[in-house]
Image (cartoon, rainbow, N blue to C red; front, side, top):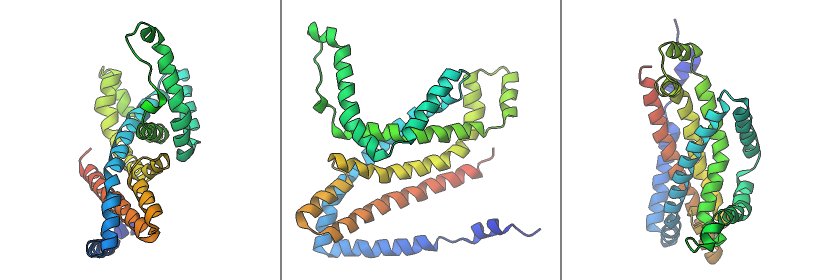
Length: 271
């Protein structure tokens, strides 16, 4: 029996695009090393890479935990919990990330500080604690909270789809063996669902690397913000944003290739 066209195409598909991209990247690296202007731009912009990586990692880990919690609420036996989860998902998914970023930074953060100060009022009056100011909550952490909330709704749907992909017969068999709900989830549902969850979850991770550039609107010193500051002072917009693009491509494509390799190894493991 002849192999299906789609399978044969996937087998014969060589990453020529990657070879071309690597070649272009090496040429640009040589330009950056040999050209004083590009070298100066690169040294300035790359200083924001640490902030970009930190914001992405922390926000994504928090979003994953929150998304998992929302997904479990959505699969709960209680209709009230399911409706709460659906309400959260639909509301958050309907708000653009940039708008959510502004809202959390300039509305949510002051509200959170006011609520905290109200709760600790007795402690403040007794001299045990001191009230905090809005400026005590840094713009970087406001941005992290906004990204966490924004991505948690999408991640919750990824988890939900993954959990529901597990054959109900296996769950019923685990019940008949007397496994508790937690053990059914840990031993039966999650190990199978992760194969479905990982690919879209890794895509969201790469997307967050790109969306982390939005924190620059709050003045957070990430890659994009460092580029904006340098370009506005030197008026070298072409050189600056070429370097910004170059660094983001290194991060996103390198991360995509690494995650794709992990996904391939997961598919090769026996079920």
